[in-house]
Image 1 (cartoon, rainbow, N blue to C red):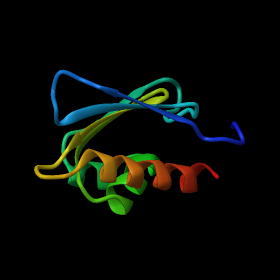
Image 2: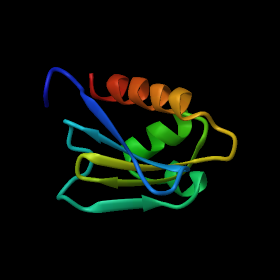
Image 3: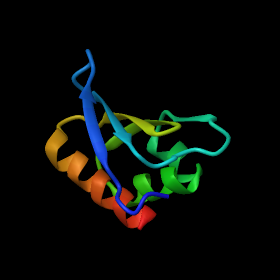
Image 4: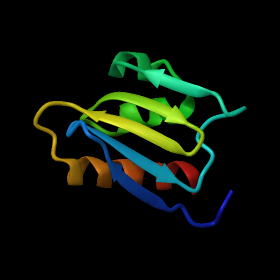
Length: 94
């Protein structure tokens, strides 16, 4: 694990979906995890549980190697949501 957690954001064609790329391994064995609802995420991997319990505004989440594909809930401001996600992941890894 790196001593620093870095993040890079990439927009998509869908204004409600954003990619967040980090320097941390988010999944084991390079498997992809998909959580179409917050309820699915609450029963998912430790990272999914941490994000769904600790950050409000996530509608769906896909975790793939070092990338999160985040779908936001209606009327959620990206800047606030991404700040919460970054802070939550930093706490998780550090």
